Image (cartoon, rainbow, N blue to C red):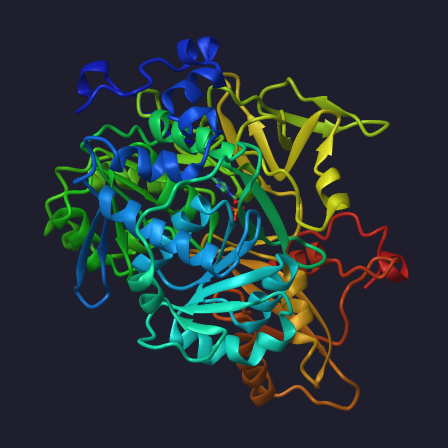
Amino acid sequence: MTYPPIRKEPGSFALQPNMPDYQECRSSFTWDSVRSELDGLAGGNGLNIAHEAVDRHARGPLRQKTAIRWLGKNGELLDLTYGDLMEQSSRFANILSSLQTARGDRVFCLAGRVPELYIAALGTLKNRSVFCPLFSAFGPEPICQRMVRGDGQILVTTERQYLKKIAPLVERIPSLRYILLTDAKDHRSEGVLSLSRLMADASSDFTILPTSSDEMAILHFTSGTTGMPKGAVHVHNAVLTHYLTGKYVLDFHRDDIFWCTADPGWVTGTSYGIISPLAHGVTSIVDEADFDAERWYRILEEQKVTIWYTAPTAIRMLMRAPDELRRRFDLSRLRLVHSVGEPLNPEAVIWGERVLGLPIHDNWWQTETGGIMIANYPSEEIRPGSMGRPLPGIEAAIVRRGENDGVEIIETANEEGELALRPGWPSMFREYIHDEERYRKCFVGGWYITGDLAKRDRDGYFWFVGRADDIIKTAGHMVGPFEVESALMEHPSVAEAGVIGKPEAVIGELVKAFVVLKEGIPPSEELRLELIGFGRTRLGSAVAPKEIAFVDNLPKTRSGKIMRRLLKARELGLPEGDTSTMEGGGSR
Ligand code: AMP
């Protein structure tokens, strides 16, 4: 079903949007004008994200303003002002330099949404080291692969994570020099230190050294269909995109209270859970706890949240809660709701209007783009089901691969093709770490090919169609089937595994594995449960398969690649499509 556009009357805004007219803004836009709204390091010493996000405000009238309000899962509340954040991140930067951590060295964080994570992220950037977040629900395998690939030297984590996951891995990560425990009272050993002790002894003065806008600042891992996770490298210049999208998409005004529900283990939680709101000097809410409908409504009310950035899975979970629950809370402060990460059902946009009193603004981007690229803007009409239009400064197109490594732009409205962006925006990823070939392959005929299939309508709105590859999006998180298959194959009973995303109403897709057992091992319910447990222990709950089915063999191409597309079609009872490349000539 198609829903009519949601039009906004110019007089209906609680606050005049920062971008009153999309076309006008797009036609006069320059990135230089964005740069001129930022500060830069004193003396023309370059651009550093942490300076733009924190120090410049802490040294000005916003010093006493709450930068981050942290809500602990057990009811604790901690306010960090811009001044506090500057001092604490400076302490952390001093700790790094005292541990001989240099420019470009990788500092990994494996922790839930605790204040130390935010301090470590900003302190790392100040020290010109590289912030590399890991999701706290990762199991040992995803952690190890990412840390090895990213040459992790420092790891900031909690005692629990350390004991459960890291201690047994240390030998496998040769680059790792120090582990800093956020909640340990005392140092454990020469290499395993108490962060609070180090913080207490460190100086709160730190001068950021000259930083090139093109030097590596953040390393975010994302999943691929083949091979191991890809480490997308972002540079300090990315703050231009974070700032611009904060201004035009999220529509930050100085008195806003912003809540981004994403975990910094994923790119949204870093770009918009840390950098963008701080770069605008607004107050950000950080909630340590996981989703809970009542808790979330209470936070919106009690914290007087004005702008909320969340994800379709969470919205669908809220849609399942009774409307009566919502009515118990006063959400009158809320003026904008945004969503990202997966397709947002048009019904959800309408539900937002009906139940929250506000339509939901969908936007699109990915780890590689570093920031929002396509969006529904506060001042513009929303087309429910559409991701919106490209940001000023961003050229997007629907393309088809042509002859000789070229691409052809599809001009016809509503025709499906690959979503592509013209390279060169400030937060564009600059490499996949240690994988030049894979990086190069993303650029074809002068375009960055995103891996998504989409359509563009007559008025330039983009509509998501699906992934062009086998990557699974589960509860908003990318999961690479290869990573899951490899882990399952380490089980002594497994000969082979093929992994797909099976559509699911709330979390979008769930990870399902088809397993071929070794000769002579009979399938059983017991073994199925054992494999589910094995997957969880190895991979962690965010990545592990939730369903496992035993099969006699997996469909493969003649070159031996698992045809996950076919596994999926069979699972869903859909036509099998072109099976000409299949082993055995395509017959089953
Ligand atoms: P990640 O790199 O984990 O942020 O995932 C990026 C991918 O998530 C994109 O390439 C899309 O496949 C999907 N995605 C992100 N935002 C949207 C959206 N608004 N609508 C549909 N898919 C989305």
